[in-house]
Amino acid sequence: MSDVDPRLRAHFRIGEPSDERFVEAAFELVLRRPPDPDAREIALSRFADGTLSRAALLHDLVTAPEFDRVRQLDDVIALARGARKRGERPRHLQAPPGTDERLVEVPWVLSRLRSGRVLEVGYAFAEPAYLAGLVEAAPGELVGVDLAVAEVPGFETVAADARELPFPDRSFDQILLVSTLEHIGADNELYGSQAAPDANGREAALGELRRVLRPDGSLLVTVPLGEPGDHGSFRQDDISGWTQLLTRAGYFVEEQEAYELGDEGWRSAPTFEARGVMYGTRGPAASAVLCLELSPRRLRRLVSPDGVRRTARRRLGPRYRRLRGV
Ligand SMILES: C[S@@+](CC[C@H](N)C(=O)[O-])C[C@H]1O[C@@H](n2cnc3c(N)ncnc32)[C@H](O)[C@@H]1O
Image 1: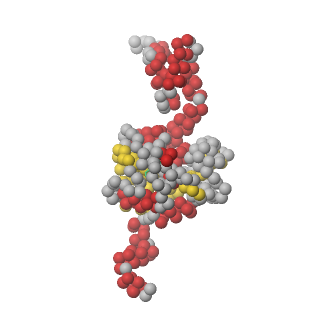
Image 2: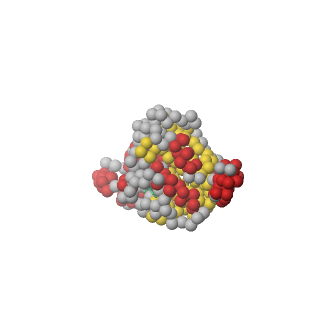
Image 3: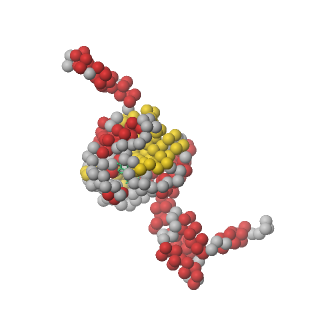
């Protein structure tokens, strides 16, 4: 067999599987999903009557608009993989016009992934490509928590409320919230939850996340940016709204980057102005997004003059006020 023309061998190999198996494999390879029943039936009957070849099916799948999304996600996950390998933290990411914010959020977060025990909050409806990217990155241990339940091979999945987590103190090295914080305490009927709206839900969840994060741990958060407002199923805020919420909850902003969707596509927006930036008016979802890396503020609060004052006030109570003469 070693003398056989390798091109001929490839033809034999592609001809080997049954039509059913080929259709299945082509959809999984190109669109990363099985064919829906109608598409499977049409392809099989056209294979049978000779109006569709195997090459033509592959061409149709690769040129379908659905493949654009597969390609865009694959590209950003590859970018993050390369950045992690080189120890880089990419900024100034770009994505095409008319796309959603995941094309910026996913590489921003995946490239900053740490090793250790990682908690993904709100994983149940995440892009399969992102979840597979997390598993492939193999940080150590991956735990997913959500009000909804979903099986993810490679994850330990836990159905729980981020406002009341069933984990011990200081048990995670990193926590990820990709477009999730804005939904906590909001109307989550869309995701199958009947929980009553809770105006303090985000604060409560941030407190819990701080409790379960190790003191040297990191919290990666992405949230929709623009004119502040309650959209029922989520809340959008401007930069100062988000950073005040996070710093009030006891986090220190280690890094932040705003992105905005314009005519050219997604671009970094160092001078972002929230006025007139409305959700869903420039693309399918957010018109701008804020990506942040945060750390718990325990140490910094203690060593800053303000932190020393606050700690003394807490520890000494009325004696502190007497000492200060207030
Ligand atoms: C927009 S989806 C998150 C998107 C996802 N992270 C991604 O990467 O595409 C919001 C998720 O947050 C979850 N969620 C909302 N409130 C929650 C809470 N209090 N505790 C845990 N999960 C919550 C919802 O069930 C839903 O899965």
